[in-house]
Image (tube, rainbow, N blue to C red; front, top):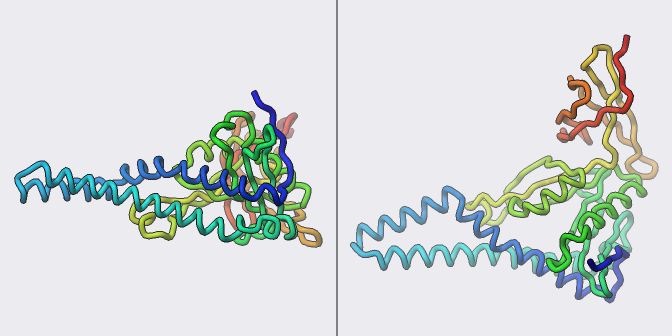
Length: 286
């Protein structure tokens, strides 16, 4: 298996980064089209069109042709949606990666290199929506180099950067059709906090949603409360940025001893579901 290394972006990587990003995004077109076909509205339109033309024309040829044209139009709409997103991204932050990620405070961009070739990318910038968090962006790995642990290494690089800079968590956005990416992020400790529709018309019609995911810098620990199966978080203050602090409070919950329980973590006035880990050696209070 080929080895790889993670390093900071250099100006000569620009075209390779754009290529990795463009190819990676284009790979989601087939799964997105399949998602469109599974939607009840899409199936209803195809069925109504077929039945109406079948009844009026008394022929199979016309309804089959009409349904084929509708399917071709739907696929083209999906392709157009992705092309628009790719073009917009290439004109914005990917147009000048050094200026956007390397010269801005608390931002960075890395590439994964194997045999002198850029095979993976990731960047992070301060999140606009949630204060005190970094946003993971432009995660992509060439198909030929997947399964080598590159994506996990890139995620860890962002996590280490987040910890070193004193931010509380990492957030990211991914789409409903990126199943493998969702599994990767969940494995790396991310949890889904929100689901919302893409603003484009075709996305709203076909229920194409984006997922908002968050990974806390450190999982909060439980301490034993007064009763055998009751655990409670203490309120504590954590540094988010130099010179700033933010108070994080946690709900009291009931957890069967020795088990994990999904609950909510109040982060910057937002409830975030997480899996809690019991501290080792927690015993009953007498």
